[in-house]
Structures are given as C-alpha cells and as structure tokens.
Amino acid sequence: MVFLACKNQKELTSSELESSAVLWEHANYKPEKGAILPTNYSTYILNTKLFAQALENGSIELPNYTNTWTSYQVKRSATMSESLQEKFPNIRSYEGQELKQKQNQVRIDQKNDSFKIVVYTSSGTYFIQELETSGIYYFFNKADLPENTGLINE
Image 1 (cartoon, helix red, strand yellow):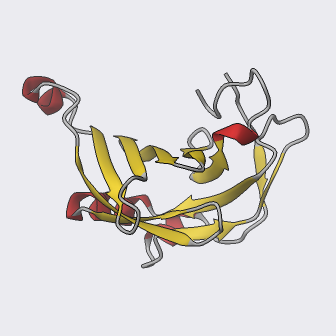
Image 2: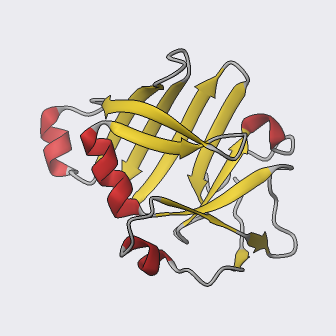
Image 3: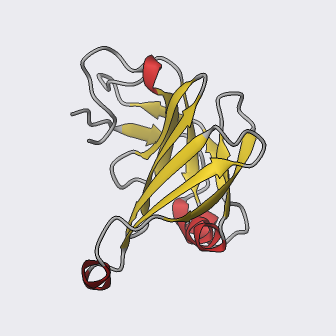
C-alpha cells in the first residue's frame, strides 16, 4: 500500500476547474519528502463532473504517455446485480477501447466523484489514479513503480 502527500504548485483549484469547461488540467505537483512515487509520471486535475458526463455519453479523452490525449469509446460494464446497483448508485464501472487502436483497452471504476482508470496497451499498462481524495490524478506506467510498492492509494 502506498500513500502519498504532495504540495499544490498550481493556483487552479479543483472547485475552479469544475466550474470551467476544461476536462483535464495539467498540474505541476511536487510530493512531500519521503513519498514513494513512480520514476516517471504526470499530474492532472480532473473536472469530475464533466468526466462523469463524458462517460455517460460514451466518449472520453485520457492523457497518454506522450503527454497528448487519446480518445476512447466507453460503455457501462455491469459488475453488480441490478438490485445491488440500485442500492449503491454512486459506484459504477466502465469499459472501452481506443478509437484509433481498438486493441488498446480501458477500464474505469467510479465511486462517487473519484475515478480509477487502467489503460492496457501493447506498450504497457498505464494507471490514472487519484492521490487519496485530493483531486490530483497521477498518470504513470505500471513498469515505473518501484519494486514491491503496489499502487498509489491502494
């Protein structure tokens, strides 16, 4: 289990991003001393309301390892029975594929306004994962994690 602490180096807050039309805002965050991080990563602030709407509409954009954006077509993935889904409406799962390279797959888990995203490509497995409940999302390649550390916030 890895827990991180960081300092915000950007003036834009999560609430300010939510009131804008920007889905992902690249952010420059520095971790507190002693944090365990992947050797290579990017940080973003996610407009969770817009992202949830995009998921429901079936089309999302995600950051990628070249610091550009990749489009995915997504749909809900039933992981719970209908009665259980009714009991927990704020927990959802989605699956999808990249529009240009259909062999690249994505899985997205949503709990309330937080998302865990895993992208499977021929060049590796990538994670986009929130740092605790800070609104800061780390994008990193699984291969860049230090050995025996697990994933951020798990």
